[in-house]
Length: 98
Image (cartoon, rainbow, N blue to C red; front, side, top):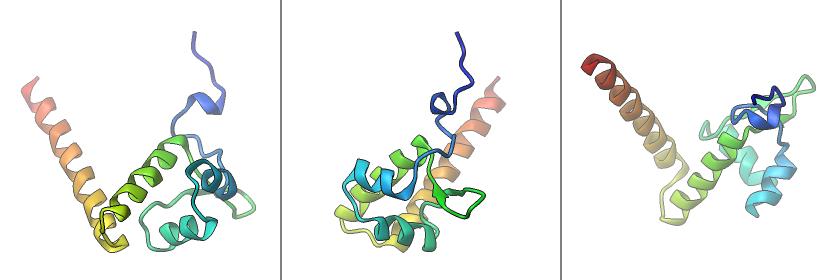
């Protein structure tokens, strides 16, 4: 049975900065900085408020781990960009093998 409720969609932007900060035990200012530094950029509501998907919450959690290992936000951004490129290339290879 399929549902059209947004919480069943991992990309639905439904969580506020406060909710994500509470979930991950970080300061809201940290989440705003991730957005300003183009590390994790959430969607915006009609009123301009940041809204995160569960997928982005997991991404922020990953960023927290990378930062704890000593990476800078610029380093984390580059890491995430390269990781996305690897996934894209793996997808292309899989398509070519079909």
